[in-house]
Length: 434
Ligand code: ATP
Ligand code: MG
Image (cartoon, rainbow, N blue to C red; front, side, top):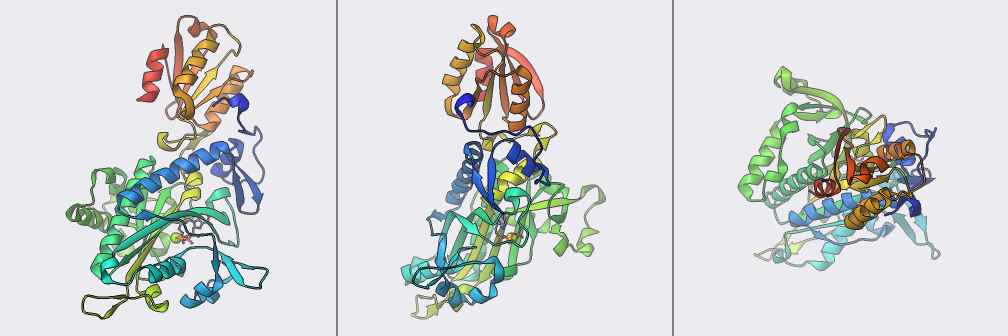
């Protein structure tokens, strides 16, 4: 993509309304704009990051056996009366009335809807287990929307729901999701730690939150450094590997301040104790028959008796992740995107637009790298191009200046380390494509 033709409205000034780095950087790098309190438009570069995150989430949900579907954003109030949550949910729920005076709401989550769908679609124990997910916008009328997309009112969530015939099946579904989550976050280039959590609005008795570490996180977190060396990508879904993984993940100490247990904490070896702040990027719940019983969803078992399915629900804050990752990965100059989710993997900086030596090299690189590359072809000072590329945080910059270009040389800069190397055009291409 050519920067001269792209809508990436970067800002030089620090936006006064933004209190934390990721919010400032998302505005300054031209990723999002606020349209109303807690409601954002995703501009082209921001959407590219959001889509790449969603793609990894989707791939790992598919890999753990969940099926993708899409439920609507608008739900009927009657559905929520069945579970008793219509009144319980309070002011966070955006309630809407249509022209026929029918009560609707903008979904904050989908337990009721998926339970109704399953109640209609399954009849026999043979139809279970099932695990389903969608990636859809949610609305929660937060008291204090803040920190940009970290706590928005409208936000993109992946939510999955599992239905099993008994506790053993439901627990297996829970373990699979925990592995899927750890694989998902690792693939994004971030460390997320599963922490025992309260179940809140969703209800139930087993839950973990996944936190990524950042100084501005809303929760205090305490954990064993063993999590920093974890490798979920090496774990498969065979039941024995799953059990070993789950046992290791849940017996190693990790808790938010709400659940912090001093007795267990003192047993963690001193040199492995870590304390910091965390941003919740996902949460998983097992809540048994809470919704299936309340909403009268049963299937006929092998002996003809009714079985109320055991359920779990599993959320990932897809739009929150964009902000959370930036919060964890930036410096004074700007964003430092992990490679897999950068809006553009590579930027080409033409230091003298219109030059006989630099132009053909840049054009050739642009043609080869194509979609995952942003070509800074503007007639701007070199200094301005450097600053904007650092701000936008592309993992690689290929810097093409007149002196080197004359002899076929370019400079390759790695954003994360600021390392710069001079090399031939072919070698630069090979490096960024590897
Ligand atoms: P929080 O405690 O941060 O308010 P929650 O526990 O109410 O979040 P869940 O119901 O667990 O949220 O939703 C699943 C995921 O959706 C969360 O882990 C988070 O990543 C994301 N999420 C929840 N609320 C918001 C929001 N207001 N803005 C952006 N993402 C959100
Ligand atoms: Mg939560």
